[in-house]
Length: 307
Image 1 (tube, helix red, strand yellow):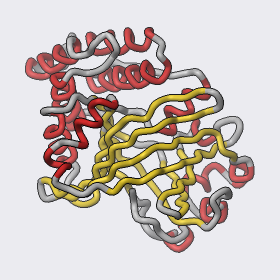
Image 2 (spheres, rainbow, N blue to C red):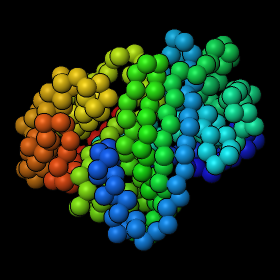
Image 3 (tube, rainbow, N blue to C red):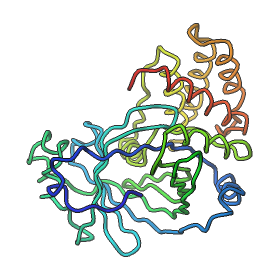
Image 4 (tube, rainbow, N blue to C red):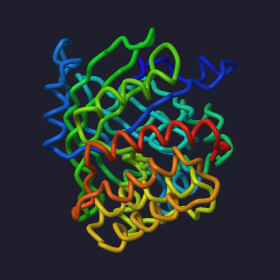
């Protein structure tokens, strides 16, 4: 979690702060295995209960602009956070993020929001129509790990997304770069993937909640290898949240298209073939799937244009 800052109007001339994060989906069994991993067992975790309310207008103005706005209660304080659309793929994203402490557990700091560039573009009418649209409540086990001359926050989140009557489980690993090089995120994930089955996830908690509320999980079009992997990842996220078998079939089809793509070098095609055979009937990855997905995601991210 970023350190809380003062209200944005005190930092108007500064560059937008950035969050660099690698998100990986887990099963509850694999979350328990990860907590027992020797690399984490050597550190004392911080256990937190986080309750989050996400805001948008009734016609989803923020979601359409790929902006997430939340109030988070944790450790007796309330944090207001605004995140813009990330770019990247294979679970890795870089996005602008502003976060600061507020005094009210129920009301937004609208004056602070109005100072942020994304909200200035949407106009003050948007601010006046903001209301809570969904909630995410989860337990976080948080570790700070030094790896490859970098500092990484390791967060294992387990809980629930609630939007109206719709619910979805949260069980994920987030690796956030606090200092150092983004490459260290991949390397740490590789270390975990040697013994714990996991997979990249390209869907934020806010995006998952919005899809739940709408009952609609859009999949990105694909032509290039990185786009096919992104489509497969989104389809797997959608399958686990919706329970609709069609999304598992869409993920399998996207992985097959990736494995057959003429632009993939031979080594990458072998990795893609491991993805095709690496999901069980419930859409859960094997250890081999996670290892291949991370290696291929990293290679494609180096070559792909920003999304």
